[in-house]
Image 1 (tube, rainbow, N blue to C red):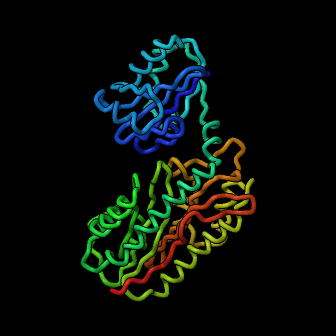
Image 2 (cartoon, rainbow, N blue to C red):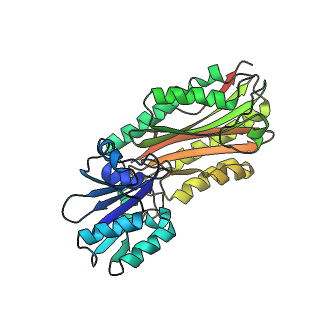
Length: 344
């Protein structure tokens, strides 16, 4: 049995897990034979191979132009055209036209989906992985401490987030992703960073994911430029109640659906918007690792991103927490979210 894992710039956890190589622009494939050294196919130019080798322990790094053509050539080179080959990430991410071309060109290969096995391996984090997630979260928390000085009336959201992004990258973050809403937007939904100019009295909600040493952490903050309206305090309290309900429910062996239902019970009728965002997911080498493990339960050592994002009563609030599941419950891996008042 051989294994192949596929990933791209958006979701590269499987490739990183097997090779430490992180695609920066396009895609990559790790080829791991039952015997012998692995091979990394990367959608890069030949002149980029030396640089690629500095971020992977794999010695045999090969560029590819069209994956079906180059992968078929590799399988033929290794005389594996009648082998059983396990694949990871193909059904989720590989374009169907590429997959059809590969299957047609290697008609005698016995393809076997192995997504479940690699998901189970990746779900339970070792101590150094947990520390990497903690470090990613700490970078995000540190960068967000800059927010009160950049969220000011007359400043655009793009300018403010650019300053936060500069800070988090100066701390060593490999990547950062933001979803925001300000002013009237806070009642409706999060969205990509835009050019809206902040005004006195605005509520700002911000969801942030930070990547460091390949691992992700998630956090969120709620800000208000001026006095905190009573309605905002109520919405924010509901969000924190939802997070607390999930944290108090989490134990090894619990199903992910049971954790989400605990949040829904705590939120009552106000949780419709939160459910639309999803209350949680696994987190690690991908920002949103699936929880659909082989036995359907959360295992000890799993790391989770919990979130409650609410909109209503003319307000919005975001609360998030990255946690590790221990034998007796969950342990936070980053600072708690907060409702922060900024003098207008």
